[in-house]
Amino acid sequence: MRHPEPRLRILAKSLELTERRIFHAFTGRLLLQQSSLRQVGYDHLLSGPRRHEFCWLPSELRWLCRQTRPLLHLHLASFLCFTAGSLLALLTPLVLKWLIDQVIPQRQTGLLALAVFLVFLGYQGKTTLTSFGSYLMLAAAQRMGLRLRMSLLQHLDTLSADYYEDTPVGTVVYPFREPIDEISYFGSDLLPAVLRMFLTTGFTIATMLTLSPALTAAILPLVPAFLVARQHFRRRLTVDSDQVQIDRASWSEFLEEHLSSVIPIQLLGQQKRQERRAFQRLAQSLRSQQRLFRSGLRLTVFSSFAVILSMCTVIGYGGVEVLAGTLSVGSLVAFYSFIVQLFEPLSGAAELYTRAQKTCASIRQLQFAFRLTPSVVNAVMTATISPPAQIDFVDVEFGYPRQKNMLRIPTLRIGAGEKVALVGDNGAGKSTVAKLIARVYDVDGGAICIGGNNIRSLELQSLRRSVCYLPRDPVLFDGTLASNLHFVKPSASHDELNEAMRSAGVSDFAATFPEGIYQRVGPGACQLSGGQRQRLALARALLQRPSILILDEATSCLDLSSERVLIGNLQVSLPQSTLIVISHRLSTLESCTRVLVLRQGRIVADGIPDSFIKAHDQFFRTCAPAPGGNPETLRDLSL
Ligand SMILES: Nc1ncnc2c1ncn2[C@@H]1O[C@H](COP(=O)(O)OP(=O)(O)OP(=O)(O)O)[C@@H](O)[C@H]1O
Ligand SMILES: [Mg+2]
Image 1 (cartoon, rainbow, N blue to C red):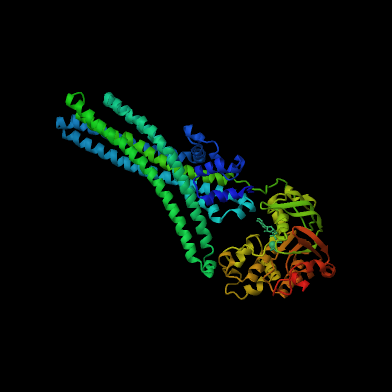
Image 2: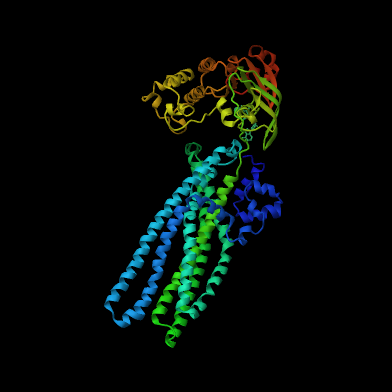
C-alpha cells in the first residue's frame, strides 16, 4: 500500500495519544485534510460523535455479525444449551415458592422429596447444559479465529513493498494475536449471550408480574435507569480500549524488533538502553490497562448498586405486603430470587458491554488492516513471458514519497538475451530500476514493457515467475538446503536440483555437510556463510528458469574467481535469458556484453565493456575514490 502521508501514522503513534486526542490535534491544530486521516485509518473520528452511538448496533458489531454468520449453526446450538440451562435455573425459585407455601405447611414428605429432586435437576441440568454450550461456543470461537487469521494472511499477502517497508513487523503481526482472539471469543459469545439475555429477562419479568404486579412495578423503573446511566461509561470505555490496543501494538512492535536483533544489540552494548525502552513501553501499556480496568470497575460497581437497590426494595416493600397478608412468604422468596435472575443478565450485559468495547477496538484495528490496498495492482491478462525477453523503458519516471522524481529514464532498450551490467554510485537508483522491472513498485509515469507488453497488463504471478530479482541478502528459510531449493519448484527432480546446485557451486559446500543437501541451515539460513547463502539463492533462481534474471549485488560475497565462474555457469544454464547484473566490481563488467551507468537516477553512459572504461574515464574521475577500498571497484578507477 502506498501511504502518501506515512508521516501521519508515525506522528500518531509517536504522540501516543488516544484516537480522540489525535482527532482534536489533527483537526483543531494541524488542520489536516480529511483524506489524510482516512489514509492513516482514523477516518471514523471525522464524523464527530460516532454514527453508531445513535444506532442500536455499532458498525463494528454489525461487521462481527457478518463474520459469525457462517458459524450460525454452532451459535444457535450453544444458545439452545444456555437457554435451556437458564430456564431450568429460572424454574428453581418457583419450586422454592411451592415448597414454602404448600409442601412445608402440609408436611408432605413425598412432595418434599420431589421438590428436592426438582431443585437438584434445576441446578445440575443448568451446569451440564451450560458446560456443553461453552464447549460449542469455544469450537465456534476457534473456527472463527482460524478463518479470520487466514483471511488476514491472504490479504496481507497481496500488499506491496511500500507497506512492508513502512510498517514494523510487530505492527503487521499484532492483529494476529490478541485482537483476533478477542474478536473470535466475543463473536461466539455475542449471539447466545444476547438471545439468552432477552429470553431470560422476558421470562423473569413475566413471572414476576404474575407473582406480584405491584412489586414488579416498583422494581422495573430501575431497569431503564440502569441502562441509560450505563451510557455514561460508554465513551470513556471506548477511548480506554483503543489506547490499550495502541500500547499493546507498540509493545509488540518493540519486542519483535528487539528480539530479532539481540546479538547486534549486544555487540553495540546497548542492552540497558533497550531494557529502559522496554520498561517505558510496558509501563505505558500497564497504565492504559489500569485505566480501562478502572472504567470497567466503575460500570460494575454501578451495576451492582442497581441490583442491591432492587433487592432492598423487594425486602422492604415485599415485607410490608407479607405483613399485610397480600403476599405469601414463598412468593417473596421467589421474587427475591428473581431479582438476581433479572439483573444477572443485565449485569452480564454490562460485562458484555465492557468486552464489546475492547472487541470494537480490536475490530477497528483489523478493519484498518483489511482496508489497506496494494499499490501494485494485479492485472487479469495472463500473457506469459518466454525467453528471450526484451525490456523497454518508455518515459519512465519514479520517486519514493520522500524523494520525488528520483529516477527518470526517457528511453532504454535491453535486448532479448542481452547480458547487461548496471553500475553507479551508492543511491544512484540501480536497485530501484531492478525492482521496477520486477514490479515491486509501479512507475509514476511512462511504462516498462517486457516482450512488447506493458508489465502493468501482465498477471503479477506470471511476471514474477519470469523475472527473478536476486538481492544482495537473499531471503532463505529455516529448513534444509533441499527445502530451500524446492521452495520455488516443489516438483523439481533430483537431477534438476543437482544441476542447479552444481552451476551455483552449492554442491561443493553441501558435500562437506554431514547430512548433505538435507542439512538444516537455521533461521534465515544463518548457519551458512554469506557466500554460501548467495550461492544457494542463485541455485534457487536457476531452478526457476526465469526469462529475466537480475542479480543485484547477488554475488558480492563471492571471491572474484568464483564470481566469474558462477556468472559463466549462469550464462550456460540460462543461455536465452536476459541477464542484468548490478555490481560495484570492475570484474563483473567483463562477464557482460553491455554496461549502463546510472547516476542520480539518470542513465549517463551506455557502452560495451572493453571500450567502456577508457571512453568514460572522465565519469569515473568525477567519482571520489573510496579510501582504502577494494582496488577492484569501479570507484578506484580514478586513482
Ligand atoms: N524503500 C525506499 N523508500 C524510500 N527511499 C528509498 C527506498 N529505497 C531506496 N530509496 C532511496 O532511493 C535512492 C536510490 O536507492 P537504490 O537502492 O536504488 O540505490 P542503489 O543504486 O541500488 O544504491 P546501492 O549501490 O547503495 O545499492 C536512494 O537515495 C535511497 O535512499
Ligand atoms: Mg542497491
